Each structure stands twice: as structure tokens, then as C-alpha cells.
Amino acid sequence: MEQVRFFGAWARSPKTVGAVAPTSSETADLMASYITSPNDLPVLELGPGTGAITKAIFRSGIAERDLYAVEYDVKFCRDLSQRFPQASIIQGDAFNLDETLAHLEGQKFDCVISGLPLLNFTPSMRLKFLQGALGNIPHGRPLVQFSYGIRNPIEVDDASISINRSRWVFNNLPPARVWTYSYKI
Image (cartoon, rainbow, N blue to C red):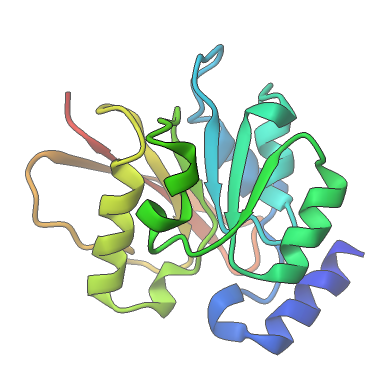
């Protein structure tokens, strides 16, 4: 059923979905491995879609009530809210987190985990996205982003930001790599 929902959303808006299949559990688990455990802060997920990465976040030990997820697609939001009733599912724009999260009054998060198809957006939008994500987490904590591209999905010319990448995950369609971005401590 998850595949059917995913394909339907992709057919409606391929630019915002950005893939032909949901994220593999191997990629999702790798992304969730960056969550501090145990932690005192909730986790922020951007672009949860059908919830493939969301489930990995819960497998990592995060309680539903400690997840805030920002999703642009109204149908995905409705489905996620039904499947994960204790999580805070927020319909909004991940490229404008100041406005989307304004009601949380400065809440900080352990990390930001993103399933957004960043390569579908302009370099300036990607930088704005990075600044918004890093502004919602403590220095030293990561924005975790996966990408199908060979190159860094967010080109950064800022020595205060640390960038790391994982090995290729070939058990993903298409193969993916996980990138992390954080302000140096």
C-alpha cells in the first residue's frame, strides 16, 4: 500500500516527491543512526512522505511523541497523522521553517532528518534550506540528508560548517548516499 501511495504522489507532483520508490530501510536506518540516543530533544523530520524514514526513526528508539515532521503534501500529512497519532505532523514548507515552525516558539531539535529531493531545487533554495535546518538544532548536531547524486547536494562555502558523506547504499532505488551538515563546535 505504501508503494501505491508513493506512486500516486509521484504521478501528481514528481518534482516534490523526487524519486521513483520510497527510501529503502537500509538508507532510512543509516539516516536514523545519527540521532542522539538517549536524547533530551525531539527529532525534526522534513519531507516524511509515506513514512519510510519515519519508521526508521522510531526503530532507533525515538518515541512517537518526540517526532515533529514537516510535510508539504496534504494527503501524506493526513495518512501520517492516522498512522502515527502521537507524532506532531505539520503541513508546511520545509524551505521556510521560520514560518512553518513559528507556533513552536523556538523549539530546538536533536537533529534534522530530511528526505526532500534537494537536487530538484535551485542552489540558492538549497542554501536557504540548510540555514533553516541548522538554525533549529544545537551546534554540532546534524542535518541528515540523502541524495542520489554523485556530488554534494548542498554546495557550501562556509568554513564553520562540517560536511560528511556516507558510503553508497546500493540497496536503494536509485542508489543513495547520506550527507550530514553541522556547525562546528
